[in-house]
Image (cartoon, rainbow, N blue to C red; front, side, top):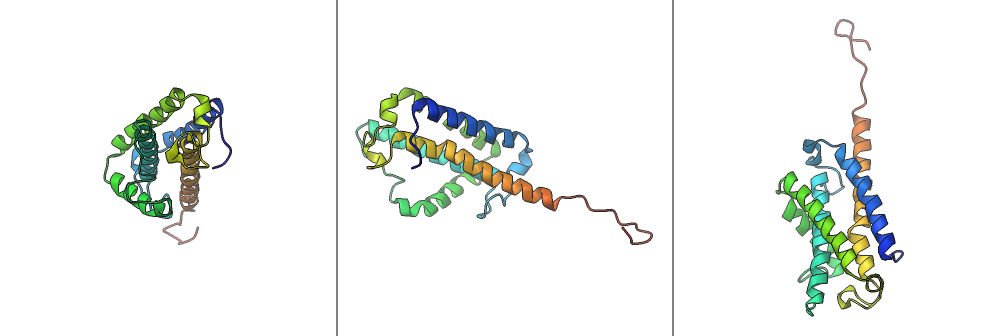
Amino acid sequence: MGKRLSKADLLEEIRVQRAALDELLAGLEPRRMTESGVTAAGWSVKDILGHIVSWQQLNLDWYETGERGETPAVPAPGLTWKDVPRLNDIIYGRHRRRSLNAVLKDYDTFHQAMIDLIHKVPDSELVQVGRFAWAGPTWTLSDYIRANTASHYRWAQKHIRKWLRARTKGAEPRRAISRDTGRV
């Protein structure tokens, strides 16, 4: 759960983490964003963004379903929180064949939808335990939004930076070997 954030603090943390992730993404050529191996599971940057998009979509769906007076299936129909690895595999499968452009469009669209939700909900309801039955007895809407935005953005940055460092190490220039002498 972490520290519970007010609307202003939540928006600021999301802004900072999203800007840092966007800066990393801006430095990548599109073809590199589809290379596998960024995570231990072999995901690409595109797959990571698809993962973030899906969790934001889930969060928005839980909220909307709850607001209609229905009980959302949290985290997903037929799954419990113990099944999150399975859910993440399902999410990966849903996005792995989508185009990078489609995933990037959703990355922007769902981010904005999360920001719109934060602005829509009164601050007192964002941080009120028990206000949203689907959030359980200890989590707030702010906690869920933070987990599916700022925390996920930070998680993505960590994996992308680690991958870039490993690629940079592997791409260190080698000394040229003379064809004539075979020496460096």
